[in-house]
Amino acid sequence: MQYNINKIRSNFPILNEQVYKKQFVYFDSAASAQKPIQVLIKEEELHNNYYGNIHRAAHFMADKATVEFEAVRDKIKNFINAESREEIIFTKGTTESVNLVASSFGEKYLNEGDEIIVSEMEHHSNIVPWQLAAERRAAKIVKLPFSNDGVLQMEKLPELINSKTKLIAVAHVSNVLGTINPIAEITKIAHENRVAIFVDGAQAVQHISVDVQKMDVDFYAFSAHKMYGPNGVGVLYGKEKWLNEMPPYQGGGEMISEVSFEKTTFNELPYKFEAGTPNITSVIAFGAAIDFMNEVGIPAIGEWENELLEYATLKLKEINGIKIYGEPPNKSGVISFNIKGIHSYDLGMLLDKLGIAVRTGHHCADTVMQHFNIAGTVRISFGMYNTKEEIDIFITALNKVRMMF
Ligand code: PLP
Image: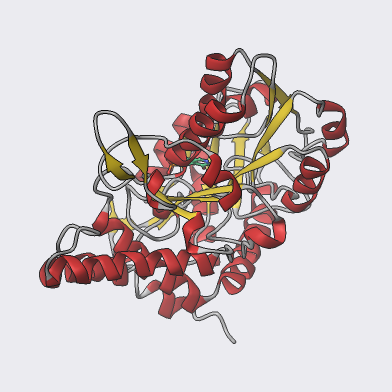
């Protein structure tokens, strides 16, 4: 089937906007993706037609909202091929998903002297919560390094694992280098050594088909706003065997079975980890984003974005003084670069004036910046709606900016 880019773009009204009277080119989907009209309509539909607080439904509206909310859990279960819907926990986003596991897994399983392996290419969200958990337990963080081309040094992994290792935390796709990490391979090594694996999928699920059972991961996290969905909601997938044993992360309504001053018992999965009223609106609208991605097809999106990646990389390499960070063989639609003699921030600011939205700075990945001994980069990242014509506009603009220096 042909990838119908015009039809896809027609669902994103914002792409027709102008910025400083210039065509708006959005190359910052890795930070947050634009939302199709279907997501916006779903939010409105909920509030106009069937809003009520969920799970305590004693009336029609609350009951209808509950059914819609829980249907999204099933959609996500199918989207990542989890074994059961009980393994899908709604959170505020990837960051909260990591904090949930770091806190709860840490409380149950981490002891003094234990070790957590964290890759060098992680977003701060997949480093700091583990540091906090390690600090509470007098445990230790161990770095899994990457090489200069942006590939994890897999040969080092078996050497880093010992009897004290409890968990490996790693991104499926790096938000700076674009590297697609060999998760199934890492999981195999982890499990052979009775070590759990936590995968940050924030930059993966919207680009590559994810099958948590096939990869056999213990935990997998992602954010709706990077998947053409609304802000303020994300997912934690966890194998039932872990989630059943782990203590609750937060206390409050919904996560309990019975409460008395003497003793409180906790609800079953997934509700044990969903204290309080969740983000009802965003979860329900997230369902529309999942439907939209399924309709276009993740493999088709991935193929299209690969074409964009190849095209943009070729064009960028023609520019004098350019340095691209991360050229792994398996790469997703993210390119980080610098141009000699121009500060990344200046480059980003001038591109913005020409209508092009890119990201500049450390991208919440200081350890990647430290690896290359740089303060920051310019990052472009693609979504399903980007085109080669937009890359041409960007390259022309980049050359124009370069001439100014
Ligand atoms: N992990 C990665 C790889 C990311 O790129 C991001 C956001 O950019 C996050 C985690 C944090 O996601 P959120 O801010 O939605 O919690």
